Image 1 (spheres, rainbow, N blue to C red):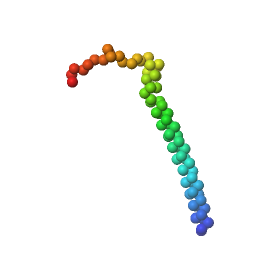
Image 2: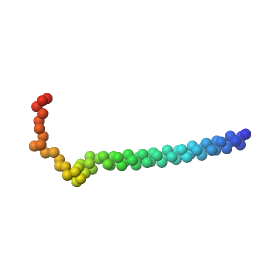
Image 3: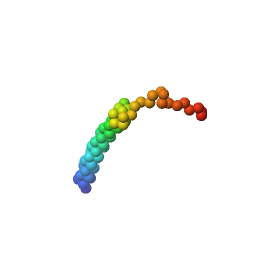
Image 4: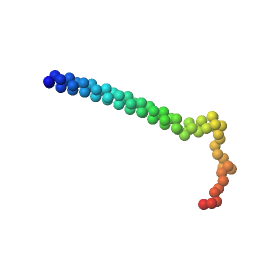
Length: 70
């Protein structure tokens, strides 16, 4: 009976180590995805894409209209 408990505890410890490794891998993947998201959404990069891909230009002062309604 003691042997069965010891064997069961050994299996649970092995399963626990597997889960801990999986959690560590997922956390590493999450950090990588967060870094990629930060890069992809950086204002400088998006501004450059707007110019290069969409051929957009910065707004000039003479294009702005004052709202007298307020």
